[in-house]
Image (cartoon, rainbow, N blue to C red; front, side, top):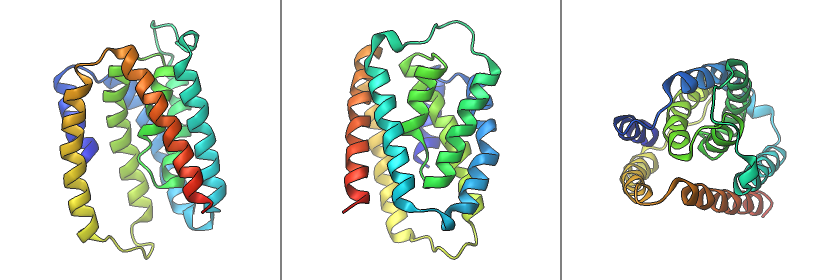
Length: 194
């Protein structure tokens, strides 16, 4: 819900690379579905550790100016490979993947930060729906008393975040995102092993 409303706002501002996003998201559908279906057999701590490591690497790469990819032409096979990897992580961990989608779109595919944020929302919507479809009927119950208020607060915060981000340069936004990403990695790792 949060990603869908954010996508509408970013699309209105022209910050969604639709063709790249569709390729990226489409490549992740089957991996997200398969990984989501296989989730009960996984080892939670190992999966979280892998995701934390990937977050930390992505954050460091985003902080290095030399890591920027040339801003001309995105090869379809590169978008497909990155999208398939992100889809698998989304299905495996049960997260939308925005914390990995943005770095992949910036670092691997060379999108500008604002465009990567908008495009990541398209990818998150597609991958999350595929992973949710895989988990439907697996015995987990949806707790609407938690989901409803959480989603409502997240939608409001996303709109506020978008307004705030519009006042910040793309480079500054990328550095802030990288530091937040490092913080998320540390927090997830500490939470997984405590």
